[in-house]
Each structure stands twice: as C-alpha cells, then as structure tokens.
Image (cartoon, rainbow, N blue to C red; front, side):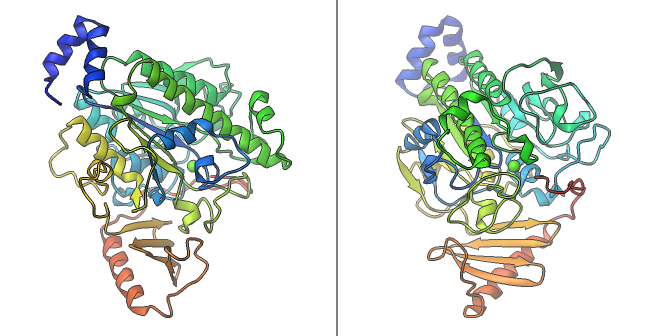
Length: 457
Ligand code: CA
C-alpha cells in the first residue's frame, strides 16, 4: 500500500465515505479491486476491437480503448471447464487432472476442480478481499466443489456448464434448468440471464465499494448448447436487425447483451469512484464455435475444442485507469493463467509455501518495468494427449495424434503453411520441451460427458 497502512485506511473507512473518496482520488491508496469478466465461447473476431463489423460492442471496445489489448492473449484450454480450472488456480490444469468437462451430477465427487488445489479467490479472501462470483461455475456439481467452498464469499449464478437464458424451472435433473442460486440457495429469477448477471455484478461493486474486492463475472453469453438455445430478448435482437443470417443475428444479439453488461460494470465503477483503483480483465474462455453456434475466429484457423489458434487465442484485454497504459497493444503472448499471480501480487497476498504457479504477474510488463516477454513458451494439451500445442516466440508446434506441424505465427497467423519439413531442428527442440512438460502432467481424473449429437459442449 502506498503511504497508507491498512489500519489507517480502515479508520478512514469508518470516518466516512468522503474520506475514502479523498484517499482514492489522491492515489490508489488502498489495494486495487480485481474484476475478471469472462465471456463464454466468444470468438477471436466477435467483438469490435478485434475487427468485428456486424455486432455492436461499444462498451467492450471502450474498455479496451482505455486499457491494453493482448493481441496474443490465450486461454489454457480450448473449452470451458479446463480453462476455468486453470484460471482459478493459475496452473496448467492438466497438472491436477482437470482436462475435461465434468458431467453435471451432484453425487459425483471426482468430476470437479480438485479441492486440494489453491484457488485465486481463496488467496484473495485470505488477504482480506471481498470475493464474489456472478454467473457460471462449471467446476463440479458435488457440494464440496461449490464456489462458496472454494474461496468465494458471495455467489449468484449456477454450478453447471450452461443454462437456459429464460427459464429456471427448477428441474434439478437437467443441468440447464437448475435453479439459479444466491449464496447456495435457490432463487426465482425472471430477467434474461445475461441481464441478471449484469445487474448482480453492478450491485456487487456498489455493495463493496468501501473495501478491496475480487469479482469474477462469468457470463454464459454467447454460449449455446444447441441451435435452439440461441436465446435472446427482443431489445437486443432489434439492434442487430440488419444481420441477414438468423443464427448469426441471434448470436450477435447475445454478444450485444454481454456488451451491455460490461457497460453496467464500467458504469458502476465510475459512479462509485473506483475507476482508478480497479483492474478489469476481459477475455473469453475459449474460441468461437461454428457448427451449433455462429462464432467467428477470422483470420485464425479452427474453433472451440481445437489447439489451432481459433480454439485458444481469444479476445483478451486489461484496463486500469492511470496504471495500465491506455490504447496500447501488448503483443507478447500472455495466458489466462497470468491473472491469478497478477491479482495476488496486487493484493499483497501471501501464497502458500510450495505453490508453483505457471502464470506470471503481468503488472511489471504492463507498466513497462520489464521489457522481456512474460513467457518463454506456452503449452496446451487436450484429451489426455490426443492433441498438443507449444508456442515459443514466433513458432508454434501442433501435434495431433502422430502428426506434427510447425507454423510461423508472425507471418502466418492463420496456420495455413506447415513448415515442419523445412525446419526439422525447431520441430525437434519444441517437441522435446513438449515431452518434458507432458511428463509433469497427470492423466485426466474424469472424462467428458458423452456429447449428444450436434451439441456444443
Ligand atoms: Ca466455453
């Protein structure tokens, strides 16, 4: 903390809101708030700041304009639950066997984020932060996996992998129709799901404006489990009425609803005077899906589920007024695993002895105190070893089954030219690092639930 001890700050809090405001305006005197806004299945080019032309995303674009855009921003997995396990732990999730989506079964004590793993909200709560999750959990349905048992003090949302946008019946047997919960208790909710999450996120910010907080806002938008579930209310559809293709029109409207939610978060920060004391991350949990849904990853190759760029490179940005340079593009690769160590460092949190994080604190890089790249290399593995990717500098090795490919992402972002035959020495080196990393990992603890035909996991 800058010149203000925590005790003095608490005294000031008690002394009244005006004193707090004075402290905040003078400098980020108290530890900053951290907000992570996670979209679900939002493709690389589904937002304006990534070049999308058909979907209005003015609020997300503003967030990026006022912050840093990570042009090489990655998630640690090409689909939902494993990415979230990595985000919550700051570790490659295959290190602890979380490599698949858990099936929705409250009696399944295995399929979930292993409870011996330390989570970001646990560490931040121990450091005195108010911690809240709004939205989708998808890290296990058994009671022991519940977010309130994993570091969050407050919860609004649901524990499955997706949800109907209009109904919570409640039907406990069907994942997408389970009741929404507030702090673990079922609640009736009548608003469109994305709007409900936006409302709750803004309320959380206002409620905790006088203390450092961590808010994890995990939208379901624009994820859809089946084409019939591209659900959106008319007011968003009207804004994208010009899009001819019906599927894309609905998808774009769902993204627009998400964007409006981001606007509510930014507006809550503004009106509470917390703009200059809050670091906001925005990213998607994986790339866009193009079969059941209508995401776009242009100019990237592939989609959700794949280790090609379309599965793992996502819209990714960070904004902290006055502390992170506005309008900057950060081109060195970063990964969702970096968010935990960044947040922990800002909170002055003490990490448990022996905890080895794969992510790094990004602040020294964003503030220009470090000029090297945050990571020497990044890794991906799916299906217990069915597919791998390794990124080192400009090169990316892709290994699917026994087939090995090499791409130069600097000249070929679309992974169109396999250059493995002409660069055998690079292939050999990257494959060796892949094997070395792979030896540190566990076999998957649980398998993906059997997908129904034409369903989006
Ligand atoms: Ca997803």
